[in-house]
Image 1 (tube, rainbow, N blue to C red):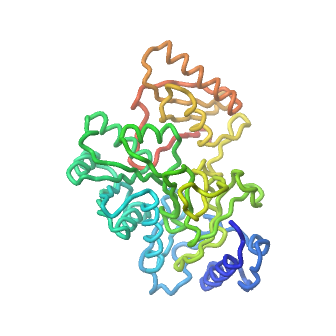
Image 2: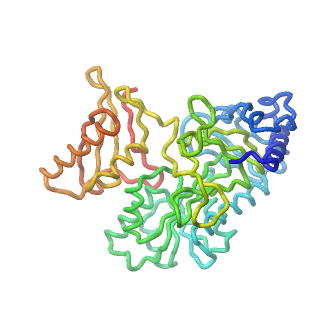
Image 3: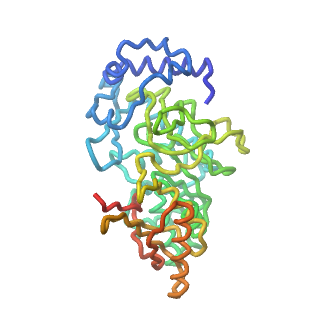
Length: 411
């Protein structure tokens, strides 16, 4: 993003508000926001990381009087101290505005009926999808996760036109709809998918089996929740709502900004957030800035679909492996489905990686040849030879939430 005088003023105001709270008073002790008058001065500020937020538990992130907090949410992680994010009334309104903008970018209108399957509660997902629908003026159908039987019945009875889900649950629903022969009875036209990274092959399966156009929505609890960006019909790259936040893409090892178009870690600074403003927050999501104007005409900049997380990096046989690389590799092999799992073990003093993948091929000899193709692709593109095991369609576990694809059993 270009460092304009307007952006500098916005950042100074955001930092000034952050200094109203004890969290940044301690981190930025003695800082005068007016000192942040250039890109170099801003990039000299320390990063904020999730571990910093955990240390602020429960409400140490707040930069407002507690009487102004109307809601709290918590990150969806299952380990360590929770991260609690307080929201003011304005924060909730701003989030709804961004989410409604996401729906509109996807061509969703007040005439649509939005079927919401992500979870409700402390997690930001379900209620974020609902906020956006209500702000847009569309009908929200707040199902939440699970009870697939009821999900399918309500889709038919209420004429749901938009499905909001994780990619894992969207695939499960797509498979059930195909299995039961319900495709002609379902009126879905679009899918808004979020909360986990998904590969092109999985995207194509869901789109084909449901007969919908798919949109990849982005967000994280620390920065409002889902709805801070989405791709448009012209591109798989996601537009980010940079009137609400500033972003950087850095080398995850050095912390230095990478050239435009190179892959790095997304860092976000909120510009308007009241309850829990964040300055230079490391998301650990890996992506790249997409240069140039989008054919859709939107003035908002774009980033590529999330490739993985810098803290999801796995080292096997001396080679660094990201889940996104496996997605890309398998998507290029004919007859290999979107669903896979990887098991990593340490046996006989050596690392051993086994990749299980689904295929519709049943012939034993053809499956063996397909396994060899997968092994050869791993060797060529990643740098070592795995054990490849083909399994039938539907044999790997499905999830109503996020799928776990890599199991590291070495530790």
